[in-house]
Structures are given as C-alpha cells and as structure tokens.
Image (cartoon, rainbow, N blue to C red; front, side, top):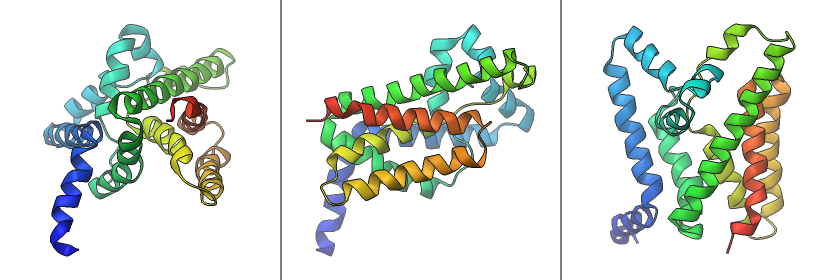
Length: 200
C-alpha cells in the first residue's frame, strides 16, 4: 500500500487540475505579497478587494483577482481544505461544473453581503468608512463547494455533515450579526446547497 501512495496522491491531484492550479496560484501570489513593503502590500490588497468602492470602479476585475489573495491562514490549512472540499467536488462534477459552483457562490455572496453593507450605510447603522473595508479571499467559494459536496455524501452521513456546516457558518453569524463576511458565508452556503440540480 505504501508503495502505491505517491501514485495515488498524484492521481488525486491530476484529476482536480482546477483545484490545485488555484492552490499553486494562491501560494505564489501570497509569497509575492509578503515580500512587498507593508504600505505597498496594503495598497495592492485594497485595489483587489471586493468592497463597495472597488465594486463601483472595477467590478469584473476585483471579482476575479480577489480570489487569489489570502487572509493569513496557514498553508497547511489551505492544502487540507482544498483537498477535502474542492478536489472531491471537482472529481465528481468535473472541472467546468465545479468552477460554475465556486464562481457563482463567490460572486453572488459578495454582491449580497456588500449590498447589505450599502443598505446599512444608507440607514446610518454603519460608518461610510465601511465602503473601503478590505474584502478578499476564497472563503465564499469554499463555503459553496462545501455545501454542494453534501449531495455526494451517502446516507446516513449526509445529514450530520449538513448540520455541521450550518452550525459552523451559523455560529460565525450569531457571534457577530453585523459582520458582512459572516452574512456572505451563509449566503454562499445557501447557494451551494441550491446547486443540487447540477449534481450528476
């Protein structure tokens, strides 16, 4: 079994090219950002954030580029979560359908959460400085992939898996209901669950 392990790992990676190319790109961009002076790194992250200001000036650009910046979590965490959630979904759905799920979850959850920010600013419940708050990363896509994976998990494990997902993301929202990212995560999770029709 041990002699087959490298070949099995390679097959697992090869059959999820989108997942692992994205992971390599995240690693490369993160290395470059860490080598920049702090002020330049902050400006780069701000230019690629999906906050209200950047969505107004360059919506298509930031929707894509924000997916290649990370929020300081360890690389072991990304390697594990991409292998546990994204890769199985890509193996199952194929690269193009996996890409549809993660892009729709990312884009729609971003628009919904930032729409909530705009409404709260207009109502005077949030300061106008929230228009430029940094908002980037892969967590909405991750939530969408995690949710659609539920349809691949056999009974009786599917229901505990779904309950665990809802509890995990719901706790983030209950802890701080004014956190737009917590709202975005719940939106992305709901979108992922709504993709049952794309599952073979």
